Image (cartoon, rainbow, N blue to C red; front, side, top):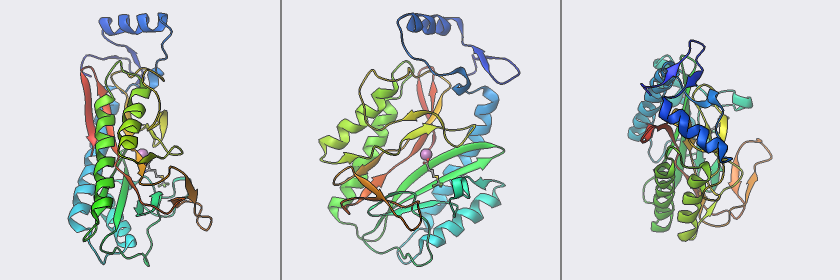
Length: 284
Ligand code: MF3
Ligand code: CO
């Protein structure tokens, strides 16, 4: 990043010359490249890092608190208190009308579970806690799975393999690789283990806005999609189902997404920065 050459309007005008040359060659060969406004300036990156630091500290804090007997509304209250204590804003709150500060997705809930004071965490549950933070105008986003009490080996394995999917996806996210390399890697690992990949929800560019380009699918083909360039920031957040990939939406609240077959689903989300020689995990 330090070698970037930026103008004062926060738009990286040009990379170091050897990188510009490589970009030109790729363009001539017909490759698709990201819009320049997706490449973060050092100023933007400083803001994004500060936001990501709070988001990670929040998940670390929750990891020490979440336990059997607690309600998902208790998690929401902790997210609100911790975030505002750090002069930050929970990005989920009122995002497209979402009514709480965090998504808590238990067992067969795939994503966007709404915290509820009547939903008590019980031994054997697996819960995804997805937190997003706005600090000084910059966005960060990450989620982890938490095991409550005694979880069955089958469900534990789902959680572990989903984490491996996320981590393998991160490894595939190299500069000059294609976006499709990430999805293909994740899909292969999930399906090899007998699981399926949710199609309707994807990773996404994040940092300056909550959800921006590119859309990072967790399935796909190697060599497809745009070329990844240093300076991009986006999430990788596979939702992996133990059973079939099909999902359905709770009609009552218009948010909660379930597996159609009622089998459990897991998700891990990180936010990464593509660098000149690999990537850097910004939130975990
Ligand atoms: N945090 C989610 C993501 O990973 C988005 C949640 S949007 C909300 O992109 F409105 F449901 F909170
Ligand atoms: Co996300």
